[in-house]
Length: 145
Image (tube, rainbow, N blue to C red):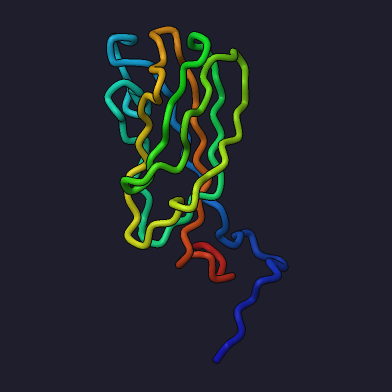
């Protein structure tokens, strides 16, 4: 059995590690006349992305680009389980690192869904959510093509 070269010496390709999905967030569909595909609408529980089998969400970051009212929050679900709860959306320019819950792994993969928390965001809210995840079957030490 051949050994896996994990040194990256002289190679241009890198080992696969953490993957990242980024999405723009709006409060509701009424907030934009032309919502592009990459924009998630919080009020209807929009899907940001679908992660593959055996994926572990390791970090969630919310960047607030237009603040909502005080105490307004969003929740983030992965494969039907809540992994980010009551994320504050009320400070302009805030970069919120969200602790992920024990439900951040799914053997079968699934959708990442953003929806309103206990206090829904108002129409002024805009943000970007960054989901960092690891595809456990892809982190083998081999180089990507």
